Length: 354
Image (cartoon, rainbow, N blue to C red; front, side, top):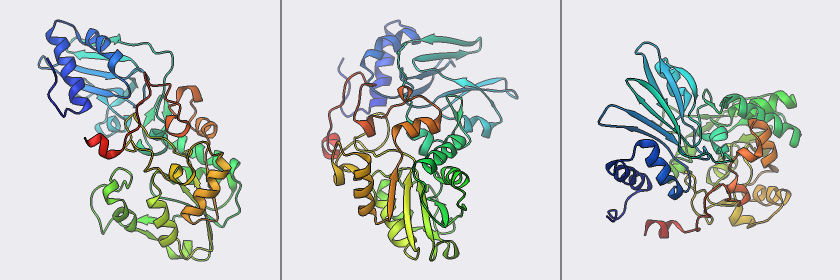
């Protein structure tokens, strides 16, 4: 039977699992049969008509998934991040392992492996931006990973400045780490005006509202005016937010240097982050492929309008997080898609929409 047209990847995966179950396969067998065709990331939770809870994580572990226990209700809980368990008063038991499926029912938990990939490929963007600071991923606290990355940046870029300021909110721990390592005072120079706008404040997650979100960031005059600012941000994807912050919110600073916790993003992501085309990426537009990091720093810094710009490198990112390079997916910065079953074909957004 051919699938209906215009299905999302999640719907197509669900349909194929349903077909396997109808043919008599159990959940572990179904994932095992489907896995050769699953190229990329998934963390799925399924509630069956029998009251079973099924949890599965892709064989590379691109995205987080964890298992917890709620003592008050004697219940297992599966969540994408451990911060959700904290909110419910549950205890973190462990991560769901890459290539693992858990079948949870009234009898307890059955654990199966549908794949045993030799290499894992955790997404470092979770550690620098996406995940909540209180979460633990692969046994590592996200807050302290970000703080460690800030210390790495201080070693790599010992810049003279008066204050270290984060771009709110995900870069705050890294700015604290940079401040502690460098001895330059940490200050809050940019704040999100929560009285003017409701809802999400993630400019990357809401690309169509990016300028609106950033324009609702306010600067603190006494912190900014006449100061040599070391600005810490998690990353530059398209560059829109960084330009507005530097040229509008920090226009009264004496000078601004910008440091990024994530390496240059030159290639599209096909593991669940919304930059699927190369043309939208600032580094690619300004530098193309294959530029050394010193040249990227110079050209992108000129484009953003800062005195000095400094990207982290993959080695520094790995050291800050506390995971080996071989355990991270860095396809968006290196162009190496070997952690996928096959390299995706680059397309424009228009081509993807059909």
